Length: 165
Ligand code: HEM
Image (cartoon, rainbow, N blue to C red; front, side):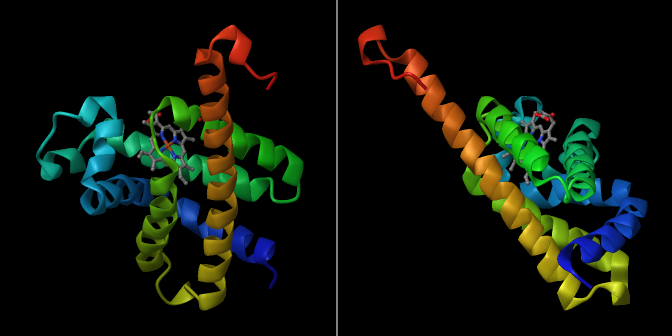
């Protein structure tokens, strides 16, 4: 099976476990990288990770990630459209103050979260396909983040130093 076929068949089953995954995604990221929670304004003052686990707003980001992944898989045959979406997402993450160094962790956490759901149906081929997909997605998000960061720096510069971006 090719990468697209692999992701398509995998993602169909993944969506069944979607809610579970979305919950795991938020929790695991904050457990491994507690500093990430500072980016989410609502959680900045919450010291207790146990309390975070039951937080609905936190699950919401996991669901957003899952729904973006669903969108990505559905658009694997429209690379230009997909590229534009992922670059835009990176730009919006600049405004959320969510730095690119954390994007890769989401892919790794995603894989850890879905592996137990798919059990014996999880294969090395599927894992490689998801890794490749996240690499592609996060590199475009990083590009968007950097473009927006450069644009904002330029806007903040004095008119005579401003580039025509
Ligand atoms: C592969 C990595 C990621 C994906 C696919 C992703 C996806 C999304 C999506 C689809 C949204 C909804 C709003 C929008 O479309 O702009 C969103 C919002 C947001 N993301 Fe991410 N995200 C990722 C990583 C991260 C990381 C690592 C952080 C924090 C360190 C983060 C922080 C936020 C914040 C603060 C918001 C706004 C609040 C919210 O909607 O929950 N994201 N993300």
